[in-house]
Length: 81
Image (tube, rainbow, N blue to C red):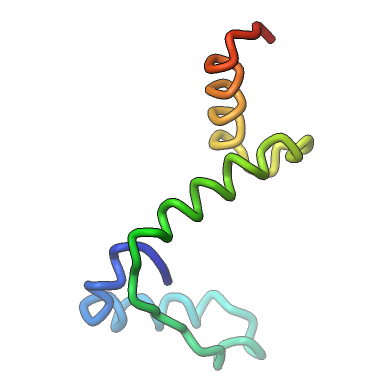
């Protein structure tokens, strides 16, 4: 789990873990759920990863976010598609 929501993990754990485990293959239901403290630089790393990987996403794996990033990059460059 990640994001600023980790501060509320103690409220989520009782619903999240059973729901997660019930959707996993039986051999994977014992996997540990790691919840780490949230640092604001995580937002910056995530945004940078999205922007830097978008030009290489020729199959559109990033979905709408990739399309939105490409549109913004084109808009900022002043070049029409």
